[in-house]
Image (cartoon, rainbow, N blue to C red; front, side):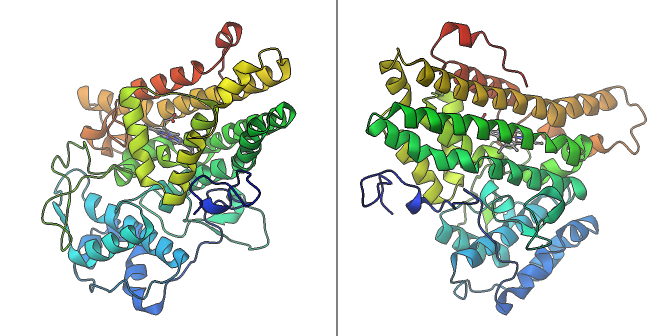
Amino acid sequence: MASSGTDSRGSFSLHSYHVSEDLGFILPDPLEDLPPHYQPWLDIALRIPELVHSHELRARVDKMPLLSTSFLCKHKELRLAHLALSMMTMGYVWQEGENNMVEKLPSSLAVPFWEVSQRLGLPPILTHASAVLANWKKKDPEGPFDMENLELLVSLPGGESVRGFFLATLLVELAAVPAIRSIPSVINGIRCGDTDAVVRALEDISLSIQDMNDALKLMQVHVDPSVFYGIMRIYLSGWKDNPCMPKGLVYEGVHTKPMEFSGGSAAQSSLLHCFDELLGVKHEEKGRSFLTRMRDYMPPAHRQLIQDISSQPSLRSFVQQHQANDQLNQAYEFCVSKLLALRNYHINVVSRFITVPAARARQLRNHSQDSEGETVIKAPKALEERGTGGSGIMTFLKTVRDETKDALLTEPSKKIKNHS
Ligand code: HEM
């Protein structure tokens, strides 16, 4: 891979970063099947919700043969293997909720999961790269890439809400494709001082971020907050900074000591990391360390792209140097304010899907009201008001949002209210 992302003509391009022209960071046409040798994995992975429901998943995994990973050759085979093994791991660990926890993952699952993860440069836990980017197929191959025509390959407990959650996130990734495609135009425009090209590219990025915001709205149509909070969320939880698993998890046959990994989160999507680096949004201390750690949960080529964007000449300085160019200044400010609006809307989403149901669960518990049939009460207490990565959610998200606002150049724009 060209580490600087420069092609033979000296222009910055996305060619070496595993970014698809049509689908951006989404894995194009993920495989639906593995070589027959791996049937024992898929026999379990394709039935996770029912096996968890009947409390059989752990027993089935314990009996699974330890399979060699040497027959997995192609990138897409490894991606499907990572997806299947990671979903099985989440089901295995959280089958009984926060009670009756396991301390180790059996070698039949841990060893191949570790090997596949090493080969992909991903951690051995559920990640955005697997659960979202590599977890889709079209019902009608000729049909559109939309909610109605998409299906998950592997699922978790939570029924239609799981489908809605992962697919809405996938559609946010899809909406961002024009923005990702325009990043090289911004960088090349700065390099050769072509302000018009930079303006055009920034306008495209702004429109695309607006489309991401619209796609994020699908969450409230397709995901039930009490199912997300009460049932699904624990399966996205990891074993780092998690009071349910203070020591982490032993991967039997890999290491004798327990290891800690954060749970799945769209903070592992490369999109906002790319925009922050491009637009010059700076994060301080705590927020930065979490976000930087999330880059270790991305496919290495995508992580490299973020790194290479960050080492390009600064767009923000370029705009400041062309203070007299109103068009350029407005295009930059508009783009930052769209990113700000997206983060504001995301905070609303988090409030709807975590803060509100958590308050309801607390209320039911404290007043010992009749909570039978209330899904929110099924959520583990330890996760109340905590991010899936173990952060104080709202404080963290508002800090990151405010740091986005700090990238704005002009005082009047800073006063614009960016709620959508
Ligand atoms: C029901 C839907 C969602 C919920 C409940 C949710 C929840 C959260 C939470 C709790 C965090 C804090 C970090 C962590 O604990 O992992 C977070 C961070 C983040 N989420 Fe979401 N999220 C949702 C959907 C999405 C979607 C669809 C995207 C877009 C791809 C997204 C992008 C991000 C980003 C980029 C961060 C890092 C903070 C930032 O850069 O602003 N989230 N989310």
